[in-house]
Length: 114
Image (cartoon, rainbow, N blue to C red; front, side, top):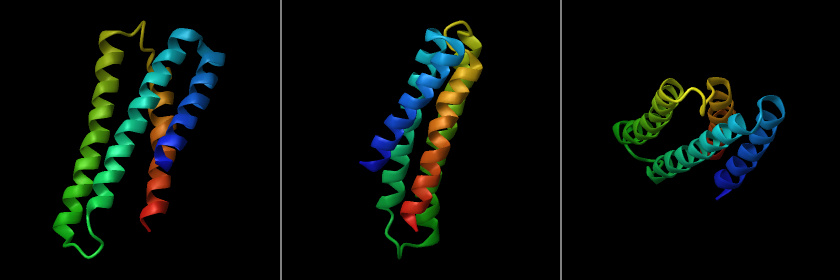
C-alpha cells in the first residue's frame, strides 16, 4: 500500500512541476507515465515479496526478472509513444514522469526488502 501512496504523491508532484515548466499537454503525459511507473513498481514489488526469504537463488532471480521485465516494458512504451505521437507525448515530460516516479520507488523497494 505504501508504494501506491508514495507513487501517487510523486506523480502529482512531477505533474505539477512539468505543468509549470512545459504546459498542460506535457503534464498530462508526465502524469500518465508516472501512474504507469507506480503500477509497474507495485506489481514488481508484490512479485519480489512473494519469494520466500529462504528460497533458492534461482527462484529469487525469477521474481527479480519478472519485475525487471515490467520495467523494461515501460521503457519500450516510452520509446513507442514518443516516436509515434511526439506532439502528445513530449520525450522530456514522459521521461520526467516515468523516471521521476520509478527511481524513488526503486529505492523504497530496496529499503523495504532488507
